[in-house]
Structure formats: C-alpha cells, structure tokens
Length: 307
Image (cartoon, one colour):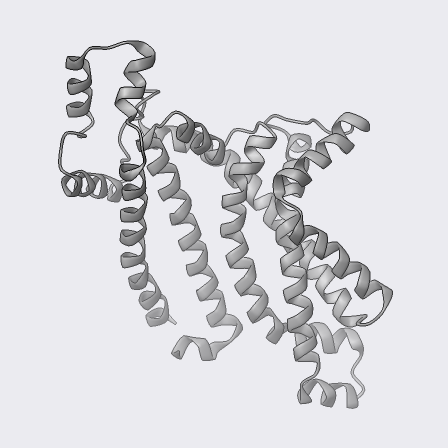
C-alpha cells in the first residue's frame, strides 16, 4: 500500500507544475493591464507605473516572472495583492474556513441525498419511487446553481422567512448555500449510484446470496454496495472539485465570505496575484482530494493497488 501511495504522490508533481503554469499564463495573457487600471483610478504618473511594475516584478520577462512565482508558491508565498496591498496567503487563510465549511456541508448533503436516492431507486426499480427519485435527480442536473439558489432564497427567505438570504456565520446562514451547492452534486451521485448498484445486483454472486435465503438488506448493503462503491467513490471525488468551483457562484449569490467570493472580486479588480493564489489553492485542494479517492480505491478494491 505504501508504494501505491508514493506512486500517486509522484504523479502529482508534474500535474501541479502544469496547472501552475496554466494559471500564471492565463493571467499574463489576459487583455488589460492591472497597474494601468489601478493608477487610472487613484491617479499616478509614468514614474509611478514604472515603480510599481518593478516592485511586483512585472518588468521581467515572462519565464523569469513564472520562475519567481513558482519558487514562491512552493513555499506558500503567493505575493502581494495589487489592490489591497496585503499578502495573498493571509487573505486566503482568512477566507479558507468559510469555503471549507460550505464545501464540506454541501458534500455531506450530496453524499447522503445522492446515495440514498440512488439505492432506493435501484431497489424499487420500475416503480413510482424510482421514477420520482430520477425526476428529482434530473432537476438537480439540469438546473443551474445560481437559479436554484435564487429560488431557495425566494421561497425560504422572502416568502416563508425561515432562513437568512445572505451572510456568513451560524448554522442558519449555512443551510441554503449548502443545499444549493449540494443538490446538483447529489443528483449526479444518485444517478451513478442507481446505475452501479443495478449492475452489481444483476451479478451471479448476488443471485446466489438471494438463493441462500439472505434478506434483501444483507444482500444490498453487505454484498452489492461494496462493489458498487468503487464507481460511487469516483464520482464523489470528482464532484468535490465541482463543489469547489460551484462555491464561487454560491458565495456570490448568497453574499458569503470565502475563497470563491475573494477570487470573483479579484477578477473584477484585475488583482492578478490574488486570482493566481486562489485558483492555485483551489486546484491543489481538488488534486489532493483525488489522491485521497485513489487511496480509498486501494481499500475498497485491493486489485487497484497493483494497477
């Protein structure tokens, strides 16, 4: 198992380097100039522009800038914010807790709701329960996150007055954003769980277990779900990345603090160091989650360790 984990860790190195290059290049190639935009708002001379370019290293060739960025990023230093003039690392650290709270809450909702709907739909295949579960999942897959968020705000905040429409802090303020973010992921997990479980329930060893007189609960949860979980774990890991990306939209819709809100605000202000730092940290989190998924594979299905 140790060699399996080491191999996966070594694969992460070129992946992270490639992602860092793409993130840095995207910011470098975007139209407009952050320094010119900043001084146009605050006022500044040509000498001020040259001074700021030199201060932030923007007067250096592209590869030199990227090398400096990469060497600092390895140490967790993403530079200074152009707008706020504070360390990007500190700003991300301040907002990280709110995003982790939202993402984990949405993940719990998506796993519980998705696997629950998928298992019920598979067990009751062809019945109205199956049809209803898949209809709910279809709505979740089809509806954009921002639209479902606005609908939930309208119903539970404006009409019923049960929950706050915006803000950060407290369990009540977390419910609507977490449900909004987790609903679409739950829909995908439900469909994958149903498909995977139906495939496993059709295997010979499951028929043998039923022929021996084992109860339906033992057959489903004790035999079938273990093999069906390999596919489900895959989709859960991938959906975590989707939840991180969706957090940008949800935090904006609900006015929540977090990395997504910080990144969206930095993009509007052309604060390139802040954008690069937030995107790179989010990508690192996604990659590490996929590493954790690979390790879970090794426990769920030992054959994968030797692949």
